[in-house]
Length: 396
Image (cartoon, rainbow, N blue to C red; front, side, top):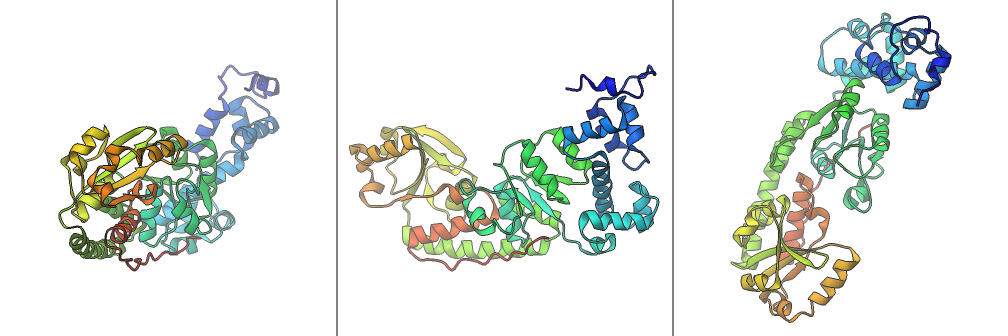
């Protein structure tokens, strides 16, 4: 990629090996508090200062000095949040000997002075999953960056596309280059993760002063508590969970009166296959909080293929269906409704069959669980519950 770089070398007379651009960038990240110049960094790469500066910006999308400033200000934000150091000490720790110059630089980059930033304890939070959005919203926090799309996160896209300023690409195990660039531009203080990410991506985020916190709990209540610790909203969290438990208990009684001892089965239909299906949200909501009767297979996570003969043996009183939206599945679903064995099921004959949407039933978060609860009440009792308020504030 840089085969012609040595023609621009200022250091060709020395025998010391030269660094690649990646190595120089790593050098800057590891020694950002030291005094350094374009000239000294160019010498490390064996390039002229002008060519080095152009090559660095072309490779990484920002100038050398902008990258150095980003590192210094990012670490200054961490120290302002997490330490009791005086301003002059923070300035020196991140590479500025003049605290007043540091203050002006900080305000130019962040938008507020270091002292004002220190007083404002709210963290700018970014997330990489829809579930993390849901957990933040019930705590009253809107993330500054999150994966939003009208197809796979329609609820958040519809209600929060204006408040969430930076829209990341689809939530995947690894952030793609575009999403990483957008994420960095949002200048979050902390990134909440629900799955593993590339260690190099984490290292890059950390070097820019962005704290990475992985939410590892299996249960949504504990996930919410872990999230609350990150944004210092523990009391809001406990109150929300307590209110949810009250709503769930009331719903359980109301639904029990409506359905009695009816046996429920949840199915997922994809292509020309039928699956006994139970994800964490369905398991915890239908067969946990609402205590609906079901078969043993669905009291745990399940995505097991099942035939019509096997389904007829279970012959449930009520069916809940998740139907994939692709064309082949729709064709199969249309034909299935005319199949004699399907029409002979008790749930179908008695009109106790419900098609439920992937959103929110594929999401596992506090907000999604609350939405499932409200949908289940309406679906099974015919009563439309007053939607519980979700207080949120914008983060600027």
